Amino acid sequence: MDLARALSLCTRPTLVLLTVLSFLGCQQQQPSKAPHRDAEPVHSAQMQKTAVVKNEPQTKLVSTSSVCAAGFDEAASHIENQLFPLRIPSCLKAIGTACPLLSEAVRIAASSAAAQNSELRSQTLYEAVKRRLSPDCNVVKAHDSAEKLGENCYERRHDLSSRLIADMDAGIFAFYLVVEEELKTKKLYDKNSRRILLNLLLTSAMEGEKKKRKKRR
Image: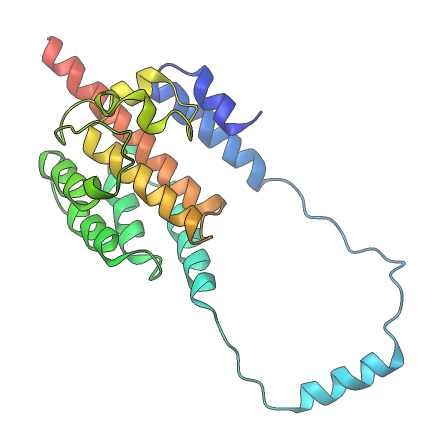
């Protein structure tokens, strides 16, 4: 099942989490293909060239984007081994430290918010990204419901349950939208950065849903 489709079918954050994590787990458990035994032999000239290269001193160059990919991979696995209440600060810490190619403002805000309570967290994140939101987004307060940003703010990029969006703070959702867009623009958006962002999104919705239940009592 397509992940976006799975998100759109769920109306409760808890169910969304289970659906998403099951989906990601299935992807990770797919067996790798065994090498083909009948592969053609390497040409002798190529073998000679390889032998020469092996005897030369090698300098291993690691691109910054590779550092980001490795950082996101390690962070995503760590996050998904944690209890749900601990995942929001862990996701923010990962965004703040895993990839040096992310803008400094995003990294600083994420690292700061990771150590803050939920009230300060949304404000810190919203202040860092509000000027980078699409002109289609409404001006809101950080602790407003994310749905107040307006459907035009996110409908072209997301197929998310309206209930899911309504349950989280606008500050966190705005941060999510900006970081996702930056990762895609810089060609850093992979399955592991996506896992981190989805965990941030979904656990934030769970936290918001819990707050609403307390207010109704």
